[in-house]
Image (cartoon, rainbow over all chains, first blue to last red; front, side, top):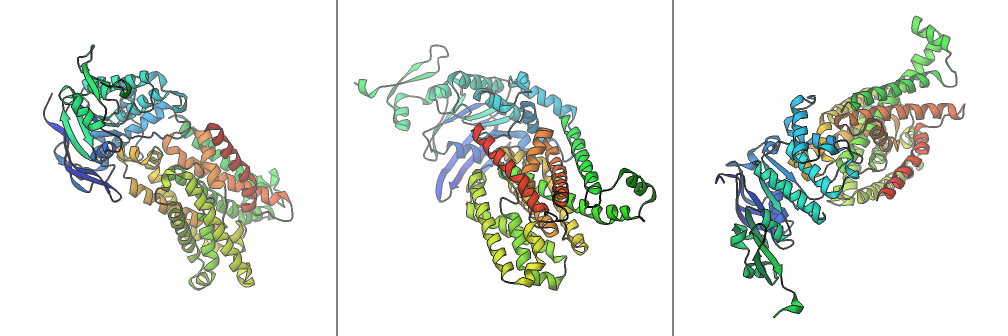
Length: 265
Length: 328
């Protein structure tokens, strides 16, 4: 893994109204890494992701994209390097998959410029990579939640950005679709994308992340390899869940097994 | 992506057909033979005077007003992600109308051109009032925005009625700005109406691709490189100019802005940038058709286009509301 960081925050602060949600975050995302951010609800995970992408105004500190302050980029140039999948998908009624993915080409097109062969091939490659080519003519409403999420990922890929920020991409999906989406992220990561995702499931985080970032109350408690961070004592401290940690029999990664209160001792 | 130019052509043909019918029908119908004579000889006979002198300006004005309302409705629906977006429902037309009713003295002093800008100011005031009433996060809650719009509409109409009824002289002056009619526009107001319409239309078309992305949500649009705030501000200016020009020319006409974008979507699919021009074309055709219906429905009286639009549009609103309920 290269140690050059694509995206970096220094002493990053952010507010929701009067409430300080990020209290000085230092984080560096190396090129080609798959970083997963975990932490209790309302710890600032989503705000961190949104602040890194300039979707949420920061109230202090700095964000560097490829070594330059991100605010200095034109929005269009930034969009060619960095794609975000925010929570809460909205799409116009009746839109078909191909048309939605095509909208990902926006940062590469100028006003009144016709759709080019390059746009078309980028769109097709994105749908192919996300495994949604055969859904191209379907309407978004007719798809399952997991398929929809893959379509949104295809749109981000059509954008041509190397860095993907995904805010809870597996929430509201059933288990098989969660695995589908995570496997897709993992494949994209192997193909060279730098990925940052907010996840809730610690076992999934441990399994897929090359780097884990643990947050609590607007601060980063620890970051590093999942196998180094996820100890029973640490998990109890952050999530207040007594547990044991065993090695995942398939991957050797940490597997967290919560204890049951009734059976404790 | 191939459907869009075809849909634009269809929209233009519908508008052309509606215009030809509007030119032909009326208290004095124009026969096919008379059409040939007009095309060959131009002005000079009675039929030509009726078609070119009376009906053509009215059709052109109707098309302009309708296009403004259709575009404004489409912009509001995209920018607020509110399928019930319409300058009539959101109080914008009523605000413009009220400004005109209150401002008759000012227009008398400053000349008829002032009416357009006064209407645009009224529209802006209504937009700001509706947003203040709906709260800061109204873009995420279409119901609040619509309710605020209904409240502001009622307030503006109420004040306008009270002012107009208390002053008979003013009542006569502002009749056309209360109901919505194409018969009352004077030529004197046209330069400013045309200017506001042109600027609003060009601004809308320039914003079209970005507005299209705004419909995916602010975060997603921003992450695609759209500068959300400037686009919102630009759409606000466009809507205010379009609604202002429409109301100054023809008074408040509801439902055209609501229905046109939905019909455009049915006709053209969701083919990105073509949605806005198509909404404008359909709005133009709808107003021309509604005005023609109003002229021929109960001769010799004319039903103002605003009332015809209300009669035709209310069922459309109910249909949309029912369909959304069924979908939810």
